[in-house]
Image 1 (cartoon, rainbow, N blue to C red):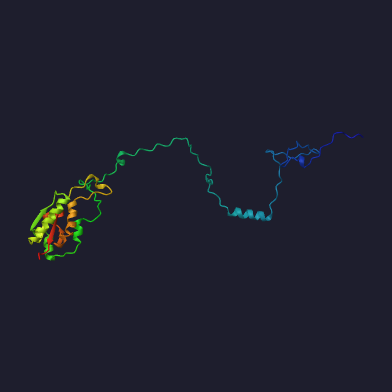
Image 2: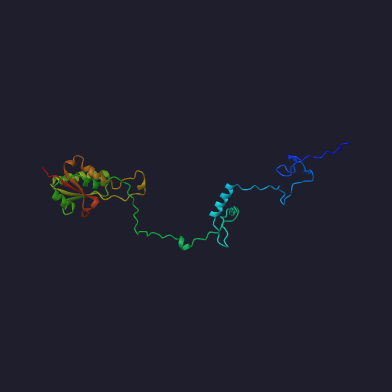
Length: 251
């Protein structure tokens, strides 16, 4: 008997209907008229395994601990969906304008008189320096003189003179007053001109040259031997623009 040239394919794992290799080498030819049952989804039917006693007991324990929801209520799950992404090209929302009344700030009241003069001369004044010196004359007499109650016996006005003229005039006046036996004389120097526009310069010129030079001259010979006390005058006798000079007694 002659054998047929056509051999019947044998089903193997390579031609299995189920599994990840399904249909990789073409359709499977059934053997003996049997083929695997087909499912609606096209997947292979997997036989179900029966639960063991331990698994069944665990499932019953979980079922007993579960609580039934109220009728008509569904479980509310959190919304994990991402929110809308803002469009970077979208125009910005309009910002409401600030009312004009809210933009006006209260203005602090400005004083009528504003001090514009700035004192940059940090050195103490002549009057302050003289006030720190010890009193050499009688204290009661000094107190009376400081209050303007002691009238000067003579006076000289150096205001308007040059430095050289004032120095010579002061020397002659003091020598004459001491020779006459006078004790209290008044030397008027003036307060000096107001600071010039360059008073804010790094080295401003000192105002009132004679006011600062007279105390220095009175401490030089020959006048230093004649002067006992030097103080700034009371305002009734010129104030900061004049000096009280109390002379020593004539020997």
